[in-house]
Length: 220
Image 1 (cartoon, rainbow, N blue to C red):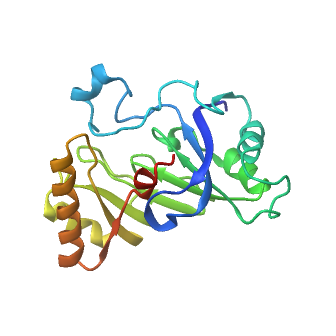
Image 2: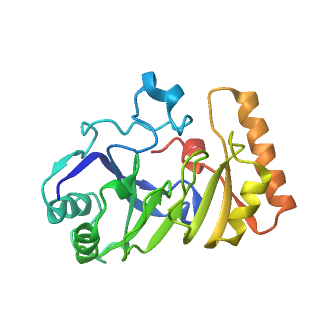
């Protein structure tokens, strides 16, 4: 299988359970909930994505004809030349929707390079075996297929998700449940979204707050 990758970069994980942890991000091109083009946004299932995942022209991006080649490119972004020499290697597979492309061969190749593998997915595609951390961020209007994992992260408030819908997630098999305030260009809307998310956690202690620290810090 070949892989289409928008970009690869080394940074700190900005949100969720691994916030602050050094990681190589591998952003796959393509998504099944939006084309990534503004002309299609109004008709898309997911209308609030702020990520560029179109094409393969980003830093470190490209088309990779074999899993080993992509794993080697990802490893080249980790400091040091030897697995384990500079801490536990950690890669976050994201998108777009990474599970449209991530397969057993890539998982094996990344493990062979000494990586712990996390994936950030919209949950509409079943996760293959072997991933070390599965974070599902469901989108209203889509069918959730991956109903278990390590972390559930719901962007709120999200049109199409009622409070009853959020409470229904509590019956699913996730180790952690988080809400994350909807971002956007309007400062007032951002403040209202954060207030909503904070109050949800206070009222429902099974949930905790995910904050996009990378945006505050001004890093990728």
